[in-house]
Image 1 (cartoon, helix red, strand yellow):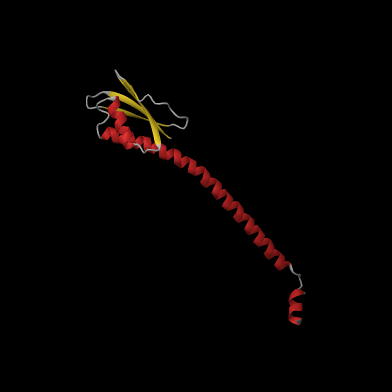
Image 2 (cartoon, rainbow, N blue to C red):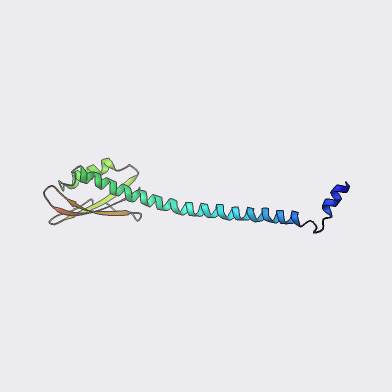
Length: 138
């Protein structure tokens, strides 16, 4: 019992315990701030990932069509069928091919969440076309 009294009656008092408690509270507050900022940044990045996924999907679809020669025919129905076969069912699309003497459009209503892409296409007949396309979730 006397030893305990000696520890409590230190020359500088009980400042060590208060300092330790203060440090624990400060670390707790810092951890709360760090965790909440991590969640906020992560939430913001999720939205960007969705738009990036849609952009990559649109580019991938028209890259596949270009590589497989589906755009060479410049036939609207053939291109629409090819896009619908490649495109996932939960997305919708729109496209416009502007060639030197011809314009081919999908004639679809465009959503406000459209993610657009654009590329230059050269057909087998050396027709130079600008393909503008977009996808959006249904």
